[in-house]
Image 1 (cartoon, rainbow, N blue to C red):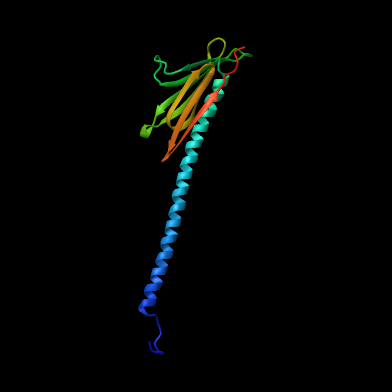
Image 2 (image 1 turned 180 degrees about the horizontal axis):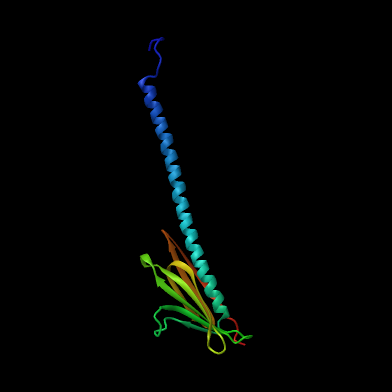
Length: 173
């Protein structure tokens, strides 16, 4: 190159383009990994939160219950998962908690909790329905000796979470 000419040679331009491409590729891969990691982390946290919600409420109601009925009641339209009943000692009000599993997309289910309260005369004085958890793959509640075992599996995206709860009910005395 003559001294009066100014500019870059083709080799310098090609080397520069290669270096910029390498840096850009590395940055793109790093960003991709962060985004995928965040997505997996969010899916895992969602699945964990759902299984914890279900475990909390079912454990709570198992402790309160004087009667626990597992499985579906053929006389009702809904497909019950479990039903809890107890009588409030001060007022005589009868509390009934019915958990149902409703189908949603992808073979998953929603866990619905219905809390019914009847006074001593049998009149309904309360009726509250809450969705406790969603994205449920499977749920089971079984009694082994005097201990209840609750197993719940949830799924969010590609992540699953399974928890097993051991519940010792209140004494009947």
